[in-house]
View 1 (cartoon, each protein chain N blue to C red):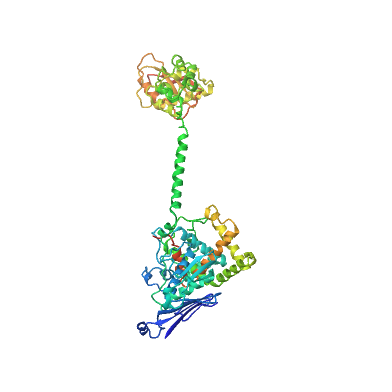
View 2: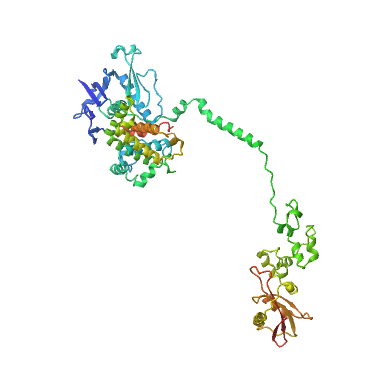
Length: 400
Length: 225
């Protein structure tokens, strides 16, 4: 008895007729028998009077080609026919996005016994996408049906990279690399013609070049770099040394740290040279304070206000008494000239004694001496006081 | 429209009266048990563990975009379907879905994270499930576009088709980064219409019995060794 299986879709009907294998049927009691021997396959496509018909070869070819074409349609990647493309009974080609040409080579006799005399008679149908889908769906339903030709099942595998590559001609694959190499070469040549930019050494700050006593970097130091050294010369501190340095930098005496940067009013009063505060802080720690402040007090503005002087006097004597406490009294009378800033800070002092036995006073004032931390105004008004240490332990402070 | 088998096997799924046979692929039943059942029918194809290829990410998102254009509220429906298919473990919420879809390199807010095979499978399952539910609409629109084309009538004469195309164009333009050359290539309405119809016919293939497998495998064409 023949078994007939039909898969119907709106635009396509697939009809299979065949026989059941006896052994398989015996095991299936209540289920429909397995169609294992295919006798004929017919494919009715809407709009086509005659069905596409054929034997097992035709059907296998149809199933394989349609299935892989459906994948090609979905991914847009061409599926190479792994079987011999010329001998395939069924072929599908894309015409445009919506039309697909199905070509079927038919047997001349139409009978399975005369398959050897196949001629090139072919039927070609243009399927729309919907018709194609119905055909694919009919075939998928056949695949899903385990009771019809169970040895044929849906085998979907993505196309390998290798097939994609081999589809591309060699020249096309080499082109991008060639373009890249060529453009690199052109760029290299273009850069070769561009001149090497000359190196311009950075101009050293003037202060640094002077303290080191060398002018390495600057091409013309005399004209280009303003030298701050001549200006302090105007203040009359060290006229001999400083004036030379303006023209010839090499013999400039390397100033001792104490001289260059001690914040004495004389130097700081000149507006051009403004030592950085960091430089100011270090020299004040020197153990022997230089008494330049006293000598130059004429340059700085003296405090003349009697009330202010009186106030400063009180402040100073208080300070001295505070330090003097607990110390042994001096042996002889000691006289000091002390310069005091507006805020009462002792900026300088000088011994007025002919004897040199004033260790106590030295120690005392070095404690009291104002150690500038921040910037101190250069033209600060000062007041001078006479400080007398009496042998009895009394201290007398009076304006100078 | 009714698709019927001569004597179809027992069909657990039925959409719009279409009986859909369940395919059991014996070679792929040995996947991890923790995965949702529906994803077991999709083979593991990722070339390496670095996530899905670029074309796959792009294609999945475009298909979902076409579904959104077909059906108002499609984005909400995607979440509902993911719950229905027990994919909530992979797509936890709206934001997670948005992040997954933004792995599409053409998106304005494209994410630099990979799309894992499991996430991609979940999105494919959702797309195919929704496509199946929309089978009637998809077929009708394709049929109409075919007829309009053969008679040289512009698409905007046909209201449902014009609506779909307009919505797709709007979605595409608002979400894709116009600075990408691939997006810039779709600069005219006609080109976008062409893309929309192309996606529609691909969605039709997703509605089939083996549509999900076909779509999934097609994403890896030319990407595997």
